Image (cartoon, rainbow, N blue to C red):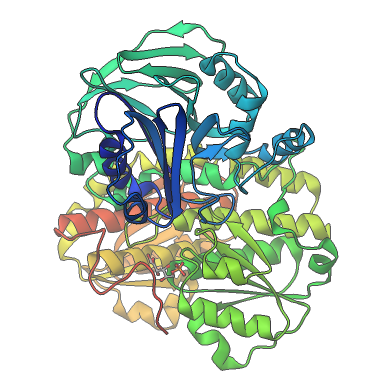
Length: 607
Ligand code: F6R
């Protein structure tokens, strides 16, 4: 995710672009930049860091221009440095581009452009767009952008200006958000409404596969073939605060709803046409991956629950033994690590000190280290031998939601990749699982849409003092995560437990008034989980069964939640979503601030 804003009108352009970018910082904040038409030239200012750093660099100077574009970045290709910050230029400095999305075939396009003599100044996928437009010569800008969009695969919202067109901004959209705002003799284009809401409430909707040409007087929209399409306007009803959260009550709820898109981004460009996993970015020698005889997966909190799932995936698919460790415990048990050990550190932030300390310890023993993180160039990314980015976009809510489901997906991709390299799994089985992964965005959308049902189910739970979340096998990490979500945002005691272990002690705590949620989606064990849940029901617990659509055997339950049917590990992703919603609705019914739970920090940099 990144934030884009463009303006053409009568105001000093910095006065619109800088506040607009600040309102889009929730979409990314690792580097920022502006490009402005100034006399006969295009002036580009950019820097690593937040919008504040860009504002400081401009130091109050005004260009005198009133047409320009800006960008706030959340890196997916290339570190968050000044040279990778947008806008990006072609070789001549005539074309300037900002982009939100992922161009899957950028490496291929770049190779072709380099052969034709184009010199690149950044490591980004975006820069290919500027050079492709340059390559197409003087054709009208909207036409060249349409041609570029036909060549570029993946998700894009592109906004372009050209020195020879000083009054026009051209933008294109496919798969990434883009809206246009209409003012009085001025026009705006942005990734999201908050960027221009203080200036206008009149918005033009831009659909996918459309190119829009904007001047101060209005907008013309064409489809990808160049046919003009009608301009549809809407009036924005939200206030600024609500608009920043996309109309959701909180960032957490917004991020829960962003999961289908985030998962699609995690998968984007990582599966080839033959149905195989391609993780070229790992750049690890296949011989090394074949020689690995043990795997450790190390993480904290929610990321540790992704590690629990990863153990099942990697062991099942590669038959390599996998140990998982809570990062703060790892070093103190004198683990057996050697050069044939693969260590995978999972950390959303890539800065959690416990995780860093653990993986550094393992690396010092000669292990190969793969970092799985959401933050490009984070400490974990820099210190790892190879990195797999989860590409969830920035997460503002303290409780991890979309960063967790994307970790689950990234770890399944990694597990399948190891199986592919080691030939430990039938290619047909890999392809089958990949098809299921590809279906996840749709399946997760369906589950997210049940939010109101979950709200109704949880309405009477504001006074409940004890919750248990139970599951076996692949359902166990889901249960653990459900309990953690409820603890951290609703401040209520919630235990995540292996369903079969309850009878060895904790069942003594089950009585009337205790809510017990059983996750029963894993085909290998779901009937056993249901038997365990029947034991909870017999002790007076209020019983919730989370099952796959079409399942039966849960008649004894007080409530049933269904998620789309799928193979076991696929269901870890869909099944955790209702539990995120349970925590969310219980916490909001109690009047709590779900985005900033007490005593917690988004990134924990102390041991
Ligand atoms: C829970 C949560 C924390 C983090 C943990 C690790 O919602 O956010 O439990 O998962 O602090 O953080 P990262 O993944 O950044 O290492």
